[in-house]
Structures are given as structure tokens and as C-alpha cells.
Amino acid sequence: MTPLELSQALFDQLSVLVERRRGEGAEFDGEISLTDVVLERPRNRDHGDWASNVAMRFAKRLGVNPRDFATELAEGIRSVDGIADVEVAGPGFINIRLEAAAAGALAKTIVEAGADYGRSDALAGPRINVEFVSANPTGPLHIGHTRWAALGDSISRVLRAAGADVANEYYINDAGNQMDTFGRSVLAAAKGEPTPEGGYPGSYIADLAARVLEREPRLLELDDDVALHTAREIAYELQLAEIEASLDRFNVHFDVWASERALQQPGPDGLSAVDTAVERLRAQGHVFDDDDAVWVRTTDFGDDKDRVIRRGNGVYTYFAADAAYYLDKGDRGFDHKIYLLGADHHGYVHRLRALAGAAGDDPEKDIEILIGQLVSVNGAKLSKRAGNIIELDDLQAWLGTDALRYTLARYPADSPLTIDPEILRRRTNDNPVFYVQYVHARTSGVARNALAAGVDRSVFAPELLEHETESALLGALQEFPRIVAQAAELREPHRVARYLEEVAGLYHRWYDTCRVIPLGDEPVGDVHRTRLWLNDATGVVIRNGLDLLGVSAPERM
Image 1 (tube, helix red, strand yellow):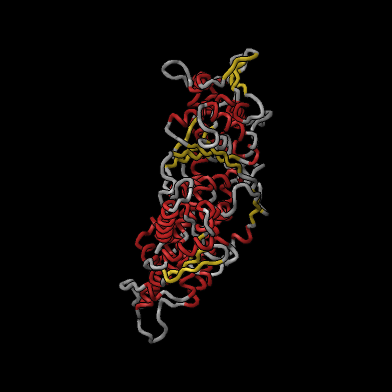
Image 2: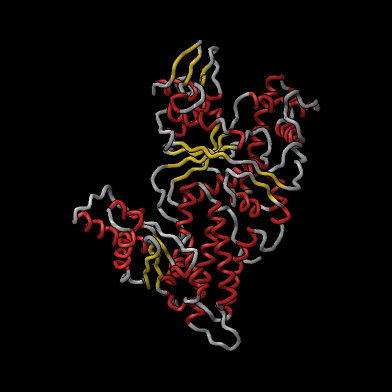
């Protein structure tokens, strides 16, 4: 019996009792749904496999005693197939114990579902745009981008697993003064000149300059303006390709690479998306003119001040590009927009929410801004190429993709994080990623050894999975779909990582107690074949969970 089936049984009985009370004159307000029936795993397994406070939640609304109402609910589901016992505890908790066969049946369900186990349609419906990283294409990705890359991609993965239609998006800030500064820096390096004032330092600029000269050997013969344009454009293309390659090695992939330049390019009517953004916002009634400038009344939506979108001299502000970009996302069919921003972007929260409101959207529903906190690595060296940052590529070469991605996804985005490389490089159980990956490798090893010993999955007798370690492991495996849906709803992939560590611990205790392969001359029995199902089910859950974090599931370690 799955948690969903158990919830359905409780819901059916709850519906019967609510209708009965209504018939007796109870003034019950509202309706009930399956989501009202919440199941939890008791901390003390002596209290059963599942517990629910649904009786206490509804008793007051029905005007009845919570414990008496819980007793009625318990009596109604006691005869449901697969339920061994139901008890009422305290003020009205319902504790439920499943029959061994009903609980054990999950192992086969998981194995047969394979990669689909844990997936649901809990968040099906709106199209979601998740924008993250979005670093300027003027240098290599650094440690901050590394955290946003891991978190953003893991958030998208759990959202997809919960049924959402999601697109990963990278916004390329390829317009503005920083691009001209970048071009001047590269051109100066190509000429053998010092870095211009305010320019980009680091040997990576010299490397780019050398590659630009390979692409355009006549660069230094061109007129100054043409040379600057050429150096900037070629270096931009090369640096963006490096960023994409770094992310690809980090197992992060984007569906859309959105260009700020594209928003500024004139259309057939001669107007760009930035040009039309002002009038589109004006049509919503939140634009006004003052002091020769054009303003958006963002204070209507909680911003601390109104924002200038076009100055009196006709020059657009950065806010104009933000507005055009937000509108463009809606034009492309995205109902919900998630922005994952760095710790230094707190000031953008109210501005973006206000922008959503000015565009006619609901700032509480259609836009979501997640602020990630800083991350540091003990003993990490600054990049030799960039000089003043710790590069993603260097971190990956030092610690490995799996260790980095798992660790960065293991903590909430809003908590500062310090990584201990000494732990991440150990092949011991105090390294969380090794601890979880080792369980997957162990399940694979058990399956290989079982095959060699003549243990297969030709028999499945779930009633034989009656040892307490089996009950505990099955109980945890049941939780996986709920954990995934919760992680998606709350945008907290760290819940998946912590769950996997719990499953790993339960598997080790089961492995130490219950044998899949018989000892000595003991014949292969149905209990061994059935335990192989549970072993393989655990491997499925670990593998699916690691995939949601962008981490590999090795079969040998």
C-alpha cells in the first residue's frame, strides 16, 4: 500500500463522516480534498508506519470531540486491505500499521517504475522559466556562479520531476559599457599594451587576445573603431563558448540563452523590445512623465521609490532592459518566472516584483526571486588566469563535479556556506556524497553477486519482508515521491540530499542484518529473491535522487 492509497482510504472515510455530520445538522464550512489528508512517518516506529492529524484538523469545524472523531475514522479504515492495525493516540492522532505484505509490495512497484519512481504531476500546469547564473560574458565563471549553477539546475530538476513544464534560461548581459571595456582590454592585450584604466585584468584576457589574433590576423592593421569592434565581438564569442563549456562539464544545461542585445535590436517597425516596453507598461497605467523623464510608478507595488525607465536625454536605464526582458518572458509563454540571484542583489527583489505588477501580472504569484548566499572554500587558491577570483573550472578539477554539485545542493540557498575540501576528497562515510554514492554502488554489487549466486527476482513474496530493518527501509522508500514534490514546491533541493542520506543509513543497517545471498550451503529461498527486490528498489531511489541533484550514481567504487 502506497502513501497515496492510504491517504485515499482516509479521505474516503473522512468524506463519509463529514456527510453524515452534515445530515445531522452540522454547519460544516467549505469542502475537503485529498490534500487535506496529511500523512507523516512517526519518529518512534513503535507507533506504527504512518500517522495523521486529520481528525484534529476537522473536528473543530464539525463541532465534535477530536478523539471521538479520530476513533470513528480509525474504525472506518481498520478493515481496509493492507492495514494491520489502527490506534488513536493523545488528543486525536491516528497511528496506522500496515501488513507486511502491503508494506513490502512497494519494492516491486519501485523496481518496475524505475526512473519514473518519485515523479508526479503535483505541479503540472503553468510554464515556468528559471533564470540563473547569467554572468557577464566578460570573464570565467567563479565560485559564486558555481553555487547558483548547482542550485538553479537542481531546482529545475525537482520541478520537472513534480510535473512542471520548466525551461532553464541564461540571460547574457552582452550590451552596455562592460562589453566596450572588455573589448578595449582584449585589444590592449593584443597590442601588447597595459590593461586600460578600469579594464579587465588577468591572463585570460591575454589568452583571449591571442585567440582573437589567430581568428583575425589583420586585427592590428584595422582602423581603431573597427579593431575595437572586431576584438570585442570575437572575444565575446570565445568567452561565451568557454562559459557554456564550463557549465556543460558541470552537468548544467540551458534551454534558452537570452541576449540583452536582441532586446535592443530594432524590429521591422524600427522599434526594439526596449523601445516598446515603455509603451506596454504605460498601457497598464503605471507610467508617468516628470522632469522630461519617463517613470514607472513601482511604489504602487512595494518598491521603495519610483524608477526612471528613460532619462530626459532619451537614454534608457538598466531598468528598461529589465522591463523588456520580463515582458519578453511572458511573450514566450511563461506563466511563472523564477530568478535566482546572488547575495549582492537584494535590491532587485522589490524592483522585479514591482516590475511584474506594472506589467499587469500578480507580484505574489507570477514572479519569484530567490537570493543565494555566499560560498567559500577552505584553502582554495585564486585563479591563475583571472587573478582575483576562484574559478569554477579550477574547483571542478580539484574537487570533482559530483562532490561540488552534491555539497552545493545539500544546503538551503539562503544559508552562507563554507566547503571543506579535505572532507570532500575523502572516500569515507563522513563525506556525504561518497556515503550516498557508495550505497548505490553497494546495491549494484549485491545485484551482481546475487546473480552469480543464483538469486534472481523470479519470486516476490512481500509478506516475507518482516524484519524491523526492512520495515524501516520500506517506510523511507515510500517517502521519496513526497520528498520530491515538497522539494519542488519549496524550491529546496537540499531536502532530496538529506533524504538520500537517511535512506543510505537505513540501507546499511538492513544490509548488515538481512542477507540477499545465502550463507554457505543454505539453499536459495523466496526470502532471498524478495530481498533482492528491496535491494534493487533502494538502488532505484538512490539513483533517481542523485539525478535530481545532477550527481552520478556509480555502480562500482
